[in-house]
Amino acid sequence: MKDELIKHLSPLKRLNLIDAWHDRKISAGDKWDVSISDALQSADIILLLVSIDFINSKYCYDIEMESALQRERVGDVVVIPVIARNCMWKTTEFARLQATPTDGKAIASWPDQDEALTTVAERVREVAERLMAER
Image (cartoon, rainbow, N blue to C red; front, side, top):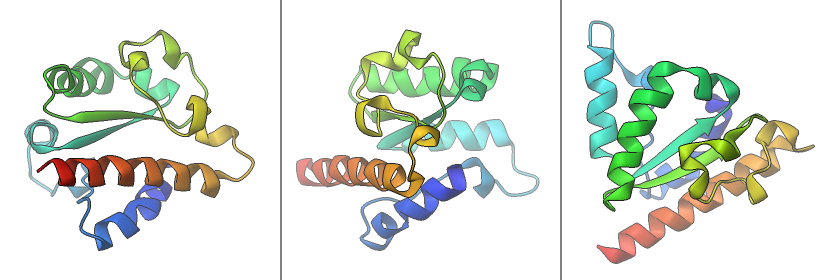
């Protein structure tokens, strides 16, 4: 699903609204934990691709997400939960944030997943444009 989301975010890259980063951009020999930490610290927008695997991952949940939410609490970053698959995300620490797609309905639950991914990309575009206007 991450690959499909990246495709849907590509028009925003073309408009110079975002520069998408993900862990597949880590090069051989790089220290992955340092690369991830650096990316999280320099981001203006962080997407949490939420599934039960994300919630159950100690690294994703306890380290990456906590770092993102720490920056969000002080207003340094916008964190957007993207609900990929159905799970009990409404009991998590990030449940206080507005999730996407619409009504936090999991992308996997949509009859047309492209429609759900387009909705996510539109929400990201709105945030990116707002952040650019504030600068």
